[in-house]
Image 1: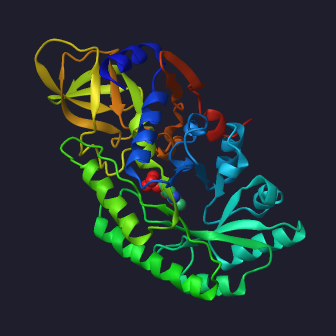
Image 2: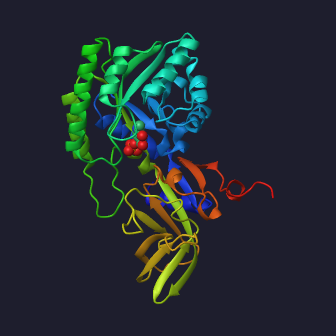
Image 3: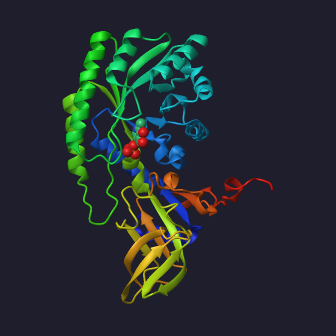
Length: 390
Ligand SMILES: Cc1ncc(COP(=O)(O)O)c(C=O)c1O
């Protein structure tokens, strides 16, 4: 959001709040489509921001979904089943069954993350007499996905009812090392060749999450042009004919979000100036932020005249850790002023420890041109944090 627009938005929003900008999101999708290889599909990892399901429904090719809750959010937002890739390390059997039983007509795809999960999917397919499309997830060296040796056995044994659609691989988030991506692509290419030697019909299809990076803090410089040029060159080198889908969360959604918090109190303690805001670290999460050591991109509203003074911006939580920024130079800060924290469209809204200290959940808005649509009202948490009736 441009500076003038968000100032107007800040006046209309209840705080603390997130505002997600539909236009900004659309522009980011267009940017990624332009930068990624021609013909590559774009998959949104819904975990980055479930509030964007509807806004992205017609913008991206598919959604990577890894919990029953995420699946319900997508379906409620009208995302067609054929756009769902049901991923996740553990898929609840009942939910798998519910989603899988019409998979041959709905077009829904499942990832396979273990031998046991493959057996479970196969048993569902056999029971409902259907063919179940699956992507096999290759591990990147953690609890997710399967070891290449196990994948080879799986393809050799080919459990009944499963239709192999290719491989899935997720590198990890905020990955800027092209060297590392090259190593990973080498391993995927090798495995793909081995699988095709076992089964020549194994599809040349890859769903790849490169962990597209975002530059969050002042002084950081991510050269996006150079990064995407290198990434595309790698895809062209390793997977020139592969049907490629790129999974993205952070790199797609971060830029569309602004978190708004108002100053509700000011004080000076032992010579240090403190501004207390109505939000806090339970709602404002930046990857790589540690105890307010880094300075995210932000703005102060209204713009004021006067000399700059250094302020420690704190949230409303009763913990000394609730410091948003240290020694921020601000002109003439006053109670009622608003701070807008940019690039909070991915993970911030979901990764915060929302229930800590039983404060409210922030409001969530979608900015659609001049309209500010409330997606969720600010909401108290005592009902979910404490016994319902005592
Ligand atoms: C399988 C998978 N794909 C894609 C993503 C999105 O990652 P990022 O936000 O780094 O793009 C994740 C995030 O955890 C993931 O687990």
